[in-house]
Length: 368
Image 1 (cartoon, one colour):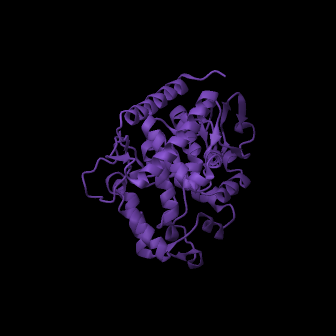
Image 2 (image 1 turned 120 degrees about the vertical axis):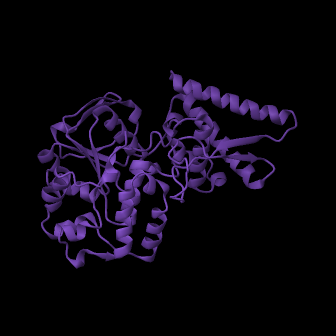
Image 3 (image 1 turned 90 degrees about the horizontal axis):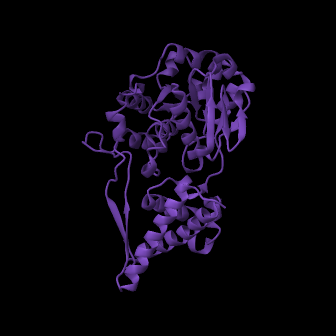
């Protein structure tokens, strides 16, 4: 089976890496492996940090002389052999497949996840380049049409029908759309609410959900979103719950996650604008007290931690003010709370008014 140029280049890097290790061992030296460290934010909002840069922020050196390092190297090499085989045979496997090839050694899934991240850093590539795939989790509907590996996705013919976002985003081609904007919604329940209300029909848009956090299992959602933005040049709005978890999801879309910081270039969408739900929307849209929930101790701790992220102070200080307001009021509420007015209030009133009036925070504006 024919391999592509990218696979051949990675196989060459793997060969060079393993050859250097064998050479060091044959010469009686203890091999060491240097792995760059990355981060997309720090917790000192007033520092002159370089977190917005995609450059490494230091490195870690693994040696066989330390027991914890020896185990990590063992796992890394075992996973590397599996990746090499996938590339050689032009086949794909999931992280879970890899785990079950050596369950007694790997002990838990996170061990494999960590090793895959190390390999990506060492080979300077993304996980999908290793032919390691994730299970499709995100959904899309609306005014969109595209091909993936020869298969046609015709969302336009039925804008309220949900399609699974392709896992192999690099194979998506011939994107066609007459949409005015892209809307990301945090939860599948809200996605279904918009589908039932025929929101896309009335508003000519594309709606996407990652069904929660767009983290490792749903990274294809962010890659797909990024591809749409690059090809269609549409504004992107994000609608999340008014709680620290919703806000964290919002920042993951725009700034990327710390866990995937080494791949931040393709795993963030800087064009994302926060549409809502804001803490200030509670009074503005006259929601009754019964819709409010008190912030738990964990909510407060999480919010205080979020407030320390440097990019909030430097890039979107207005977002930070809204987060401070939530902490000050000590309450949270869900997107679905707007149903207290009417079941379709979210579709008929809230979202259209936010977009029409451009009632988004000043921090949404992208700096040129």
